[in-house]
Image (cartoon, rainbow, N blue to C red; front, side, top):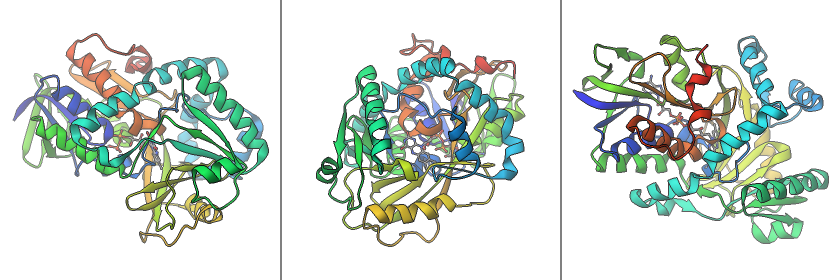
Length: 414
Ligand SMILES: Cc1cc2nc3c(=O)[nH]c(=O)nc-3n(C[C@H](O)[C@H](O)[C@H](O)COP(=O)(O)OP(=O)(O)OC[C@H]3O[C@@H](n4cnc5c(N)ncnc54)[C@H](O)[C@@H]3O)c2cc1C
């Protein structure tokens, strides 16, 4: 079978890419080894993060670095055995987080984030997925007055600078906004623009169904079988070989394997994260991030989903859910958490790039090869945003966002 474009990977990023290309009239096949939306795009906190104009930087103050090194907080955990492998990339991440460089990264990142609601809204409407969406924001909660005061003034400044709606809530304000929180918080920042999704994997499934309704095709296959042939690319699927002039690699945390075999060495790494659902009663209305304890409590169809912060480890190392174990205890201090819904926690990996920006664009050294991965902490938010950008580039249209900050050429020497 020969098509115009094959998209490898059916997470939020790949599904939105396939859809954006199909909507521009291309014949597109989406390939994954399993059904769409079963990996990272399933397991996240489900927030379309309009407020996330600043990507997570590597800490720069020595006290913060020491705290992480001594594993004193619950927001970050690491496998000491993985550090030798991860160090070169983490050093680069640290360098990119220096104030001057970071300021330009924020400019580039926020230029994408600002489109997340409008791009999702179009797809949510077409996909008939309004039932999954709640448009009431989320809470960034603080236990101590000192941390709350600092965060409140930072959030107010960010909101002013990026035209965001945030409300600073004291203890009584938190209780009034979210009665399910019974434990004491000093206060919270209520980010009111973001949308939350009751089942993130289901939203990807609905976008994939829309892609098929609009004439796109989905095939099960193994992306690692990709090879360059005379006029293009071939990949093996369960229905036989599939050829196309163009191929998009949208494999999230698995992109690194394939691009390495093609000779690219980008500064990629993962921040692993865990989740588990609980039968909380009453169920909170809004997601709450307990910032000082490093746990997000996100109400979902399956229960209250606790998600953890970053675990620096090799992607395929065995699970070590120590953060989730602690998170459960912390969550019980705030809400009536109830029993866990599943026997085992879920483990996933945020696909990260050392300069905190996704990699979107033409592969520097291969004809017809396009890269689309590395969305880090906000791939669920950014999937449709960078998908439109990539589709415009492939289609030769005037891009709606300046594509240069995300161009893979920035790592061409690697
Ligand atoms: C705990 C946690 C909480 C998060 N919360 C949020 C949030 O609230 N908001 C937000 O915006 N983001 C959040 N994120 C980040 C977000 O989930 C990711 O950035 C995003 O899901 C990445 O999407 P993706 O499509 O690139 O990757 P994935 O969703 O992982 O998709 C990659 C696809 O590639 C396929 N694949 C892999 N190897 C092969 C192969 N050899 N052959 C064929 N197919 C293959 C997989 O099956 C998978 O379907 C969170 C992440 C975590 C871990």
